[in-house]
Length: 436
Image 1 (cartoon, rainbow, N blue to C red):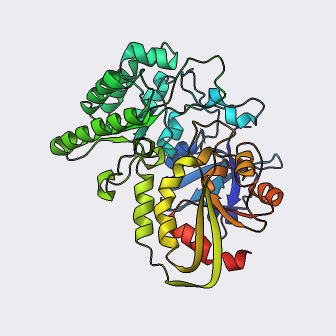
Image 2 (cartoon, rainbow, N blue to C red):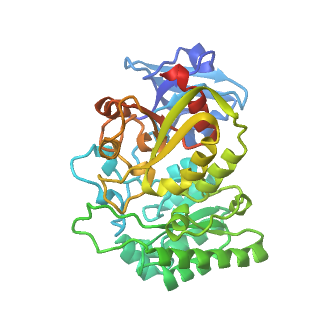
Image 3 (cartoon, one colour):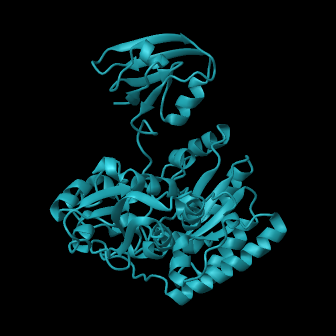
């Protein structure tokens, strides 16, 4: 069924006055079908509104509304895209979805490559499935900035990496959009001996010269134990990661002198792998690539350093912070400071990824079975904090469909999911008494 499905109506809102409820669908505004949140926002900005609603009981109702241009309707939708999601047409040699274990929930195998989600949510897209109508809409509605997975600007290499004959013209598409005022944040998923080295140098040179490109992030390829019938790839070695960081920081100095921005950033994973010191807080220039894992560590450290912590707790607490292998050096400075508080004892425990394999070290990809194996020796009743990113699938479950409650019950521990944010971590600690 087409239309924008409502999942929540705000109390005291215009929607509540109209009698709209969860399960109703907004079908048209001013006789225009609502394809996505972008269309909705544009049309709702009008002061004279003709709103067609498909009620959950099948009834169609049309409302004539007069409103201020900035008066909200007061509804929340199930999705940001209301019609068919644009699916990825590539077969990237490093695609993480293709490395998923079999027989998991269907949503984990879905590959979206939708420019609308790029504009609305910062999702990275490859620009390989755009029609002329799509390009015209991006220009007409000025859907900027877009987040683009470039991977390489070498046309032949990009075609080979993405296994798509349409992949080679990414620079032409971006240039066409840039001439209409569209800006971009870009990324490269770097694979050793494939699109790093000279190929990465070319990508950097091409993108830095293009008007509209605001930033370039370089992230390392992630490989699981479930690569079946896929091209042979390997992860970066520490010395290779160090060379890439050194190269990037040299380019940052050049960019800072010439354009006033560093432009190019390696992801935090490269710093962790190489053992190089993280850049200072100011070096990330507003953290434009934060969702891409660029600057998350430095931001967490900075926010934690600004917290006013007490010298002593009223009641003693013992807590275990359980994290992925790469999370240990990230959380170590926080744990050391927390342990200076009298009455608080925090232990840091690394949890190997027994589900996807040893090369996957990020905390966000730990599953319930990883925690079952990694925390099995903890004493009953132990309080354990795990990163909230492990269950950010929208259904409160780990990727293997176990829940934190199930894992906690099986191990006899008190398991809490915690946002990896300084203020939230301390909030959880200081409110444990009321939660237990």
